Amino acid sequence: MEYFVHESAYVDEGAKIGRGTRIWHFCHIMPGAEIGEECTLGQNVFVAKGVRVGRGCKIQNNVSLYEGVVLEDHVFVGPSAVFTNVRTPRAAFPRNRSEDYLRTLVKRGATIGANATIVCGVTIGEWAFVAAGAVVTKDVPPYALVAGVPARIVGYACECGLPLRFAPEGEEAQCRECGRRYRKEGERVWRVE
Image (cartoon, rainbow, N blue to C red; front, side, top):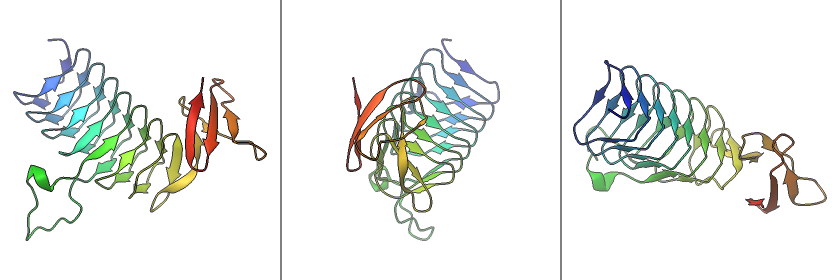
């Protein structure tokens, strides 16, 4: 086998697991789930059918990825983060068909902090950073640092994860640790090569 599965975990037939991925205690991977290479799934992670997880993702303990969730490469999901997949759930009126689920896209390099809640139907941009405990109800732009309930932009983060400080007289910033440079117009931030 080209990946590791702890003896207490279940990987159902029909799931696709990439080389070098590690699946730890009490995880359950459903048929039709796709997990890329070199990922780590901590204790008690659930991955539903149709979920796609890119390469190099780290999913911490007690996270459930329900149908409709897509994680691109190198996404970090902190412990007990929550993803929903139905906007108007009711026990008396079940909405549990694939067409009832809204797509949630977490783009490359993004971080979702511990206990954050991601309401279905949003896109979290490349290298965005969702603070612990935040409740994301709308799209998050690339490189944005969001916090609060509901989540709002409180700053911006470098690809290495450190906060960026844009100069008051201009719309440029350079990471104090790795040296990457960025430009900003309104809420839009991009890396300058």
